Length: 285
Image (cartoon, rainbow, N blue to C red; front, side, top):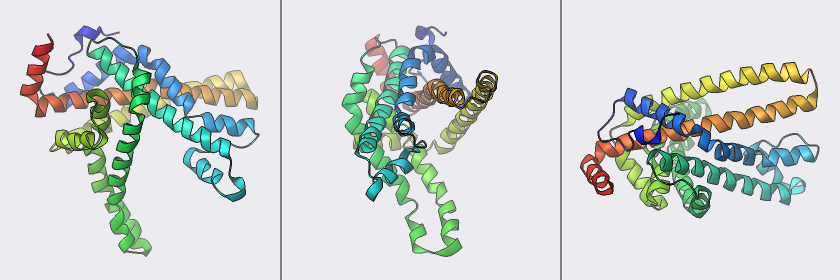
């Protein structure tokens, strides 16, 4: 594990794409073990509705689709609705706890209390989520003005501005959690930080996505092999192995996702606010 004190965070100067990716891996290696519990609990929380469905002898609900089905007429299920809301909140809280724990570790601060902070900031995170969602949806409104096959062409075309919006807001949650800003302030600050860095950030996130896909493929292959050897056609053992695989994947990939956003945020603050950052660093030494 990389010693916390040796991780250059926050960066004292703007970083190249390669340096940002290197910083991402440093953060990930140094914090993975101490974030595993939070990330695993977050994935487990995300399985609550599926566990409930299986307990009732039904097929797994399928997230939002299952929730919408549970709201319909005779299929309405109050317990499912409650579990879905609890599931969503816990997933948000534990994901926030991972990011907060990573930042505390690499900034050489005392770790602890991340779940409490996540709970306290949940309303703000939901508010920010609504802002981000509406911003992305607005990009696709032009498709409503046309019909037929043209609509699909417009939808595909609108993926470009939607991608720009999502990249521009990619640091908003880091701002909200680390700096304690409100939803709107985090939204605006992320826009300012990422302005002019779309292609750099797109390249960084694309490489990160490729790494995540490789991690998922490797773990899935290993888990599939073990399930075949241990399960030997047993449905219960196979289902258990699948659940363990999902939790394991989430536990090891969530810290990587937060690490790459933290690394990008550190570079952007050094790039856009270098002088102020140096003063803040000097003041804390």
